[in-house]
Image (tube, rainbow, N blue to C red):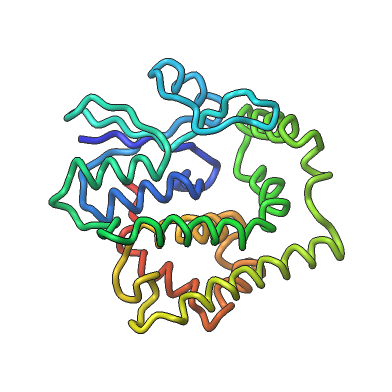
Length: 248
């Protein structure tokens, strides 16, 4: 059975990261048996180094950035990081499972996910300080230290306030409007990029939406705004992904 490594938080079920959500959605949709092991945020780097798992990117100062998701597949002995690399590995290693990278759509999926990241980029000045509330104790200390070192500011200085926050929120709304306009070009109805069929790109945006819903809370004004935008499209996407959102 595959072991899926995730980063813990103070939420009741511990799950928050949009990156690890992508892997969870992939495993669940494909029906591949797995179990989840949670590590505290400060322990992720040590674990990756011990298992010889490479960093996924670098911090702003050029130092290696280690993060989850990670999977260990005992059938092949592999430890693998990065949600996209994991998804492609699972697609290749378990070909009998539902396909999320249909032939001929690789370029489209890459372009769509990159464009979504660009359109929604304004959220991170709001989200990075907000995420601190998901951690306690040494996890909070590590989160604050690492993020403040990375940007060279206190988290309180990163968070936009007043008119700046309104402007960032409006940019986020504009980003979702643009994504909505792309999806409206579909000739097939349904909540997903391909209408009624799930592909990898749905997990990318779905993971981000799940972060928003959990970071602010289901009853928050922020989440009520987002789920009501674009005719309820984003809430409909999460409803469509709900059967594959189990936490195991």
